[in-house]
Length: 300
Ligand SMILES: Cc1cc2nc3c(=O)[nH]c(=O)nc-3n(C[C@H](O)[C@H](O)[C@H](O)COP(=O)(O)O)c2cc1C
Image (cartoon, rainbow, N blue to C red; front, top):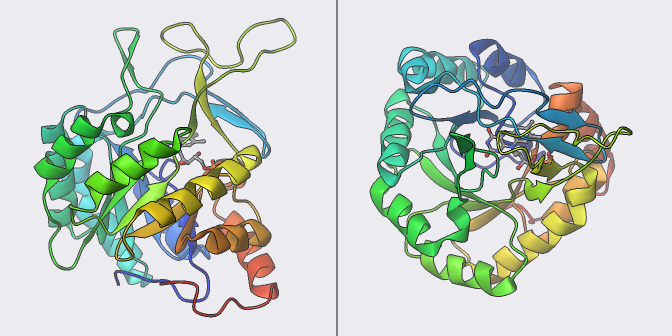
């Protein structure tokens, strides 16, 4: 049940799936696995106002991690697992703590519920408390170290995924890879949205409303693809061979999946297109991808 997904190594990126019904929809789809949106310990309403502005080429969001929190997972986590497994699909839980201890609590609940893996969201750029933006974990080596130490190893039948923000300084990737290699991380998932993108409507208002009134939001969509390919390739080079790279960013076609595999990804994730088109996007991408020449031995 764990991994891999021969044939079509493509599934959802964290974000869209937060209810039993959505787990069911993804289980029915052509996605190879199910991934939840990020859960936090306390339930969150998310940020107020217009927090998503999207077209396939360029989406901006500042959702602020709306989710029903730990209590919902305690009640429904096992049901989520049961639904996905009844379709023979692995299911991964995305978690976002505000402290290393919160990451530990959420991850361990995920393991207890039987999730096949837990993805640590170390790269959310859109979280504010009291109007102040929280810093992004993956840009701070000490914080990542504390989180991974606190979470500890997953049980034998589960995997640990570490999802990071895009990094423009190549040395940052090398430094973080040098830390992650000492932890039982199955794959680095790159990348979360591009932090602090900005756009305006025709009246000069920021298209996204943020609690700190800047309008800065996470950028995603097709424009990310070359950035994501560069991140995958750099991470692949920096990590030891036993830690995989899962690719995210700008994937909406079979051709884009293929490019991610060329760059070194072993699994490919899709977010913006899932928000815009729903789970049918996976059968669209699958039929394009499967029409391409087969790629031998590229998925580890
Ligand atoms: C509306 C929206 C909500 C998202 N929510 C999450 C989330 O809960 N956790 C997370 O790790 N990433 C989240 N992301 C980031 C995506 O998983 C993905 O990393 C990013 O959007 C790039 O992929 P894309 O170009 O296919 O959208 C979200 C993205 C979008 C567009």
